[in-house]
Length: 140
Ligand code: CMP
Image 1 (tube, rainbow, N blue to C red):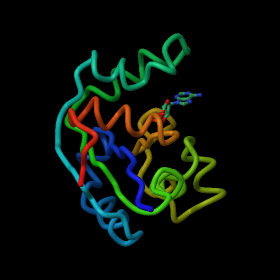
Image 2 (cartoon, helix red, strand yellow):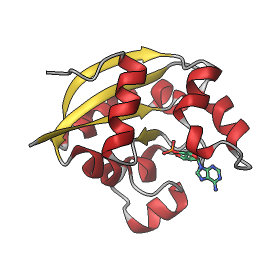
Image 3 (cartoon, rainbow, N blue to C red):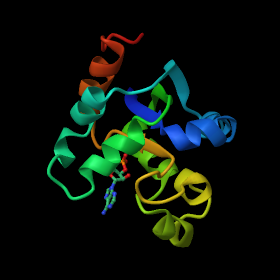
Image 4 (cartoon, rainbow, N blue to C red):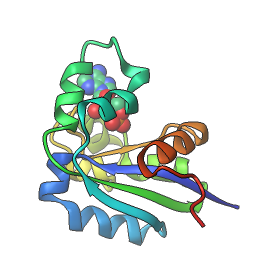
């Protein structure tokens, strides 16, 4: 069965590495079911990262996510949530370079905050974020 996930290229990477990241998405066999380029508002970023609210890096995270346009996508594939997280690599690019040098974060992240890409952590979050960003969950 096909599964959907919300994938996002963060502003710094959208500016400098968009084409290379999109190529890796396609090479990994994902279907790009929806795509738009949009700068997140602070309200959107706060909603998006509500699970991290209160953490010491939260304000910096929201700032980094709203500094320019992101590429926001719905990716579709069998086991899409987990496979996209695998292709992204570990959150911290220094860890990513050690453990999975082919991953997107190993190759294109600047630091743990500006770490090139984001992906939903589970199916429930994926559906919630897709509905929030694209206003519908009926993709096909
Ligand atoms: P992302 O996949 O966008 O989901 C939450 C983000 O919080 C994560 O990537 C990182 O950019 C950021 N983050 C997670 N942990 C830390 C941390 N310890 N310090 C700074 N930023 C973090």
